[in-house]
Length: 341
Ligand code: AFP
Image 1 (spheres, protein in one colour):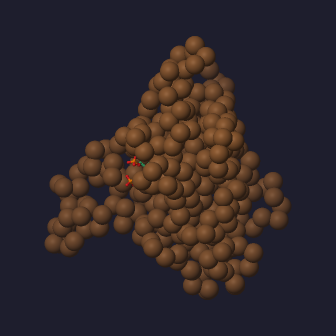
Image 2 (image 1 turned 180 degrees about the horizontal axis):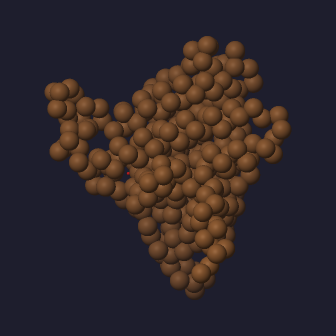
């Protein structure tokens, strides 16, 4: 019998225990982040449960339909947003919220304010719900200087100022990946315990990968460096094997695979969408933060993604993120293009 392995299995590192351990490294900490995170975790558990029932929606009247009382039911993304907004406000630790679902930022009532700003996409990839493909919640966290004088500029900060970022993927299992700025850890929800347990400690992305991930349907509108990069993935000039293409169309799932297996995820600019599609605050920044913490890179086509200073809360940006070497290659293709201009 492997007693060491058994001991390991019975000594469960929950996400709360993990964050409390981290907190002890900062004697000045008063536990505010731990409380905020526990409210985010609650939102993720709610969405996970709702997503698991989504396939039964027609039968049970759960989404966009009428329930047994004849009341109109909310769509899953709207419902998820409401749950996160309420959970974050009731934590008493937030002052500004920016959600993909809400046109305007939410300024928390002064009586309930804390020092954190949370930017989030409550249910990213929601067009995939009806076919049961993995979807997720993405979040990033900033702090404010003075919670009594908050302005929109407190969230219009470069991604490098985030104090934490993460995502929760609702797939064959429910996995929450978090970085508080020192490393990246993955926690899987044990449904029987209702707890996220540390299953992927200290995630490091392979330095080089064999997979590229992009919506090739947009290829006719790509710029030169993107087209050249993808061409090299398929027809390598150095005699190496071609890369495999994997594209789910759900950023959390595509980034999660990229983080674990290595490779590159691209949502570039194109002639139709000069700023790409993905949103800076709650898609590009949190994922770039995680990639860098895991040893990878994130680049916009012009600069390090985390250096970008957003001017609008729903701003978009092109993004190339993943293994260090692949992002290095796309950076050199853009540099070569620039030197020709
Ligand atoms: P939806 O939330 O509309 O499904 O969009 C998902 C998403 O924002 C992101 O999760 C994907 O990476 C990206 O869009 C997919 O976009 P394309 O459908 O244009 O490939």
